[in-house]
Amino acid sequence: MNEDFLLSNYTYQLPQELIAQAPATPRDSSRLLVVNSLTSCVHSIFHDLTNWLLPGDLLVLNNTRVIPARLYGHKSTGSTVEILLLEEKPDNCWLALVKPGKRFQEGSEIIFEPLGNSQLTADIQLKAQIIERDQATGGRILQFELPPQKSLWQFLDRFGQLPLPPYITNNQDYGDRYQTVFAKQLGAIAAPTAGLHFTPELLQRLQHQGIEQTYITLHVGVGTFRPVEKANIIDHSMHQEWVEVSESTIAKVLETKARGGRVIAVGTTAVRALEGAAKNATALEKPLQAFKGHTDLFVYPGYQWQVVDGLITNFHLPGSSLLMLVSALIGRKRLLNLYHEAIANNYRFYSFGDAMLILPTATVVK
Image (cartoon, rainbow, N blue to C red; front, side, top):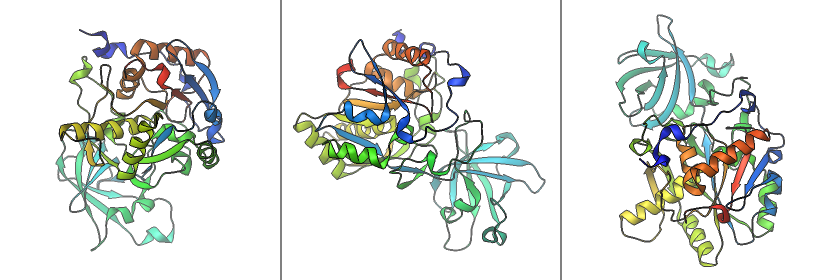
């Protein structure tokens, strides 16, 4: 079997102290590992991104916004439960992960607790019933009991919390620090973390330097962060996530390609959106075009790239589909060597960690 298809080959040892517990301040003061050739890399700072990109390049950023998707509740008997909302369904229903799931089977009613003790929540009670199990995610379908003409969206700020990843253990409320400065479209349950490093000032400097910017929307869901569990990674199935790639973004991509510029995806979610749009166009036997819908694209070594030339990305968990996506761009062995380099130089890993810039001169499959 091809070694790149073995899950066991996507591991590395990370010291616990290198898992970032808080964001860099300011955002663009995080470190940046620049991979600019097939053999070398350079240690830089994110605010110096202007030194590495060229006039005519196009940055593609994900403007999804994280919703307060984590809710806490209990049964009438007192048993407590933690809910992570995944996706809205018809008739006031939501797909959600339920913890502990074994105690909350079909028919269970959950009473949710509002945040704080403000007058805003004093006259509101939020309840839901588990009506179905979802085989694909292992989650549950919850039907919420809501006033007429109301939706759960109108109550999330009062009952929900931003769902920080479990490896961030200090439990501080970081508010908008777990949102990108360009977050706009509500729907994600995790931040597109490569975008967290940008400040409005950096985006403006890039624009002044002739580096174009455009946006896609991919609502980060369970598909992005769920670990790969199959020993042969090609047997892994990605869960679908909602994507929108607009006509204006497609036009900018095509213009960039036509003038010889480089399309640099900001984050693996931007990769999946752009390449997912390309996959959809290929299936329709049409040129690259706007796309709105779900994607379950899984990118791993051997993938034939159609849109993306380079990538800005954080450092990802061992065994994750994100690690496999980046491996598809620069090679698995090279990527793991770069991770060892980053660890040796005390880079910070995961959501609030440092970043890597992979330029087209460093990619192995184009």
